[in-house]
Length: 300
Length: 300
Image 1: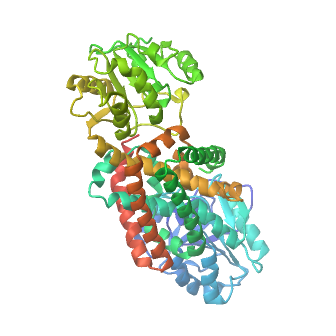
Image 2: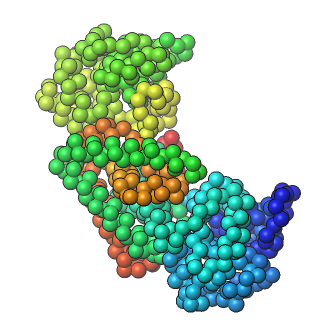
Image 3: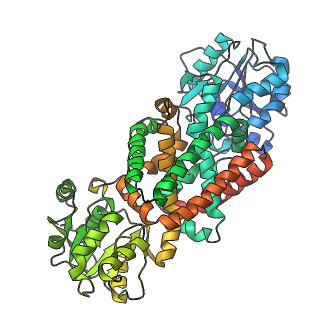
């Protein structure tokens, strides 16, 4: 419990967080600080214990069924491939307007597909959401109630999604300091494939390439800040990213192919000593990075 | 001139800096602060003017021939492909033991080749060097006398290089706070291709891929800190990096091919839904990044 007060009447009272990682834990911390009662369930009992001792949550539960009892807001914050089982357990609450369900997954088509498997459609009271915030740090230990401040949150409601539920989830994120936008599910997945999923794949791939060399210790010993920044995201949670790469397969492979074409072009320019064309490409990229860097710098 | 004093007798008195960018400017700033007299030449007159007004240098010169007059240390800090012309101008000073010439280039085979073109070999009084420090910022405006503190500097002397000259250059770097190592020219170029040149190429390629999309403004608007850190090095100086990619062609293309194999492997794992193998690779990369991250964090 916190002494922090708010001028607006809370629209939710009892929150259930399923999956107490960095995002679930940070939402729990922010909502607990606003005076809401937050219960959590996680397959990892250590996360729950730690969350309780950090006062990020008020109460732990032993199952999905138990954590959602009496909740008016359910936050699903598990890796994508773990959502199928969670949806099965949530089925009795689908389309019950007195409870709102939302998620935080970095892919949205797959969430829709998993819901369709269970219920034939995305439930009316389910508001798909995705905070564009995170870190290579993971687990509730890294949770931070300020994590979403000045960060974007994308909501991807579908035709049958309850408008009032969307508004309430939107206001909740705004109360946590986030800037809320709406995108279609497909558009969201295509954009995230480019801005987030591909860079993570490339960083994992680079570190795996370098570390599998015989002299990898020496390689990293002579590395500088460039490699450190470039590869930081390769320290991210492998389960979460396996699920994202798998679940956003088509958009990710589409942009990976475009990137492979670009690397082939660069390779050819270097091989053929086309230094003028090489310069043109590098200068264009630098110009774009400088231009868009202003947007990027606002994002953290 | 600075009031900073040193307990050790300066081994150099008059320094000539050819190329007053981030590295040349930072060396100049560090040496000026130690009480050495530093003159500079740059094809860009604005850099020289700025360096003078920042008190990074004591004196500007109009040509290579002029800047090296009376110098006992000559620092060549121009992009690699500009070194051929500088070497032509330095030819009268080759193998004169009373003056020591050093450079800061990120590739060393090409420096040897350019020297061989002019003099048939690397001059005895030339100590090839490379500080593993830098930034996406460039130009003398970003110069920092502390830039090399706790950073590695690699010297790559050849058989005929004067040992005393190597020792003097080594001590100079140590006085600037750097940790000096020695590597063979080939080994240096292979390591740097992996830790520095490839990541820069990949970052330029990613930004060029994303920014050439029709919806690039939207793409970058929804990007988060991961992309920002990953792509920061794509803001680096295009001339310098064109020269590095061109000059370190073979080692760079070798590691690029290994990386392309890794991306092909990742693509196959995702396409074929081999989530277990995908997880194994991501977990291995995360482990390596966590392990080597400790080395990387010391590098800045």
